[in-house]
Image (cartoon, rainbow, N blue to C red; front, side, top):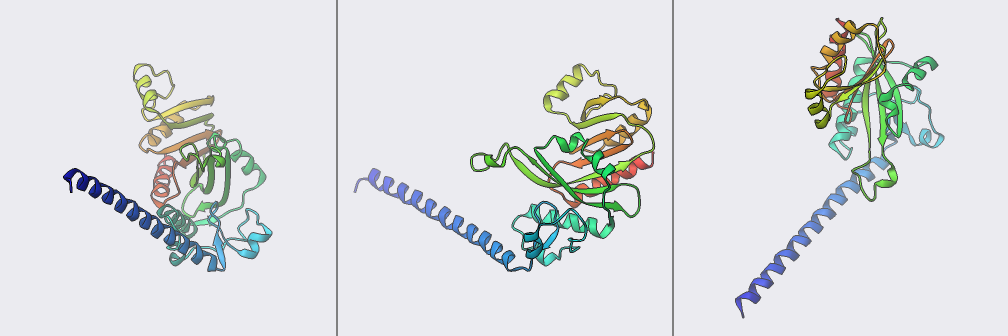
Length: 269
């Protein structure tokens, strides 16, 4: 047989083998995924993907409100291990941390109105918040926030323009007026422009500033921003006598600790 023919046969055998291997691997991964789903369906409760609240099937059928009364408390590690992704596991562990170290609250209408004014939340197509947790040792409240950007109808075609996550946001009240500012990390282009021309009052290196109402307490705001500039991967908003700090990815203990450190540094000013 001609060597070229043999080479072609070997090539196609390799390709066929690779396709079969990928197929078996995909089947194996799917089997693991559906096995985890089956295990979760056998449970007497489910974990709400938006709030982390554990609900019985009866509560789910009846619907539930944002209140604390439906929360079953800390999720056992055995149940966390049943979750499919590492992000889900880290998020549940983060919520467990808040439940252990904070006191649960219920917001009144005034507090809800303040939250609904925030640019941090209103930049998303959909947002929900629940389970306010007040720090036991210090001022401020942690929130579990579910944020969704883009349209869920885009998912079958492209996930690049869509994401939905449970994140953490911290609310710290202060005793002086901050004006209204929103801060997010600068893009590469914004960093280049700021090196050439930085007309912002605060001249921040990491964060871009969006001004909605200027403060009269510029010196105090600058001291706070000096602390904020030491931390990355956050977005911050000042509204009158309130500071909001949110992480930019799924909720996790590392980001909670980072926000705690920043909040403590601000409180000590």
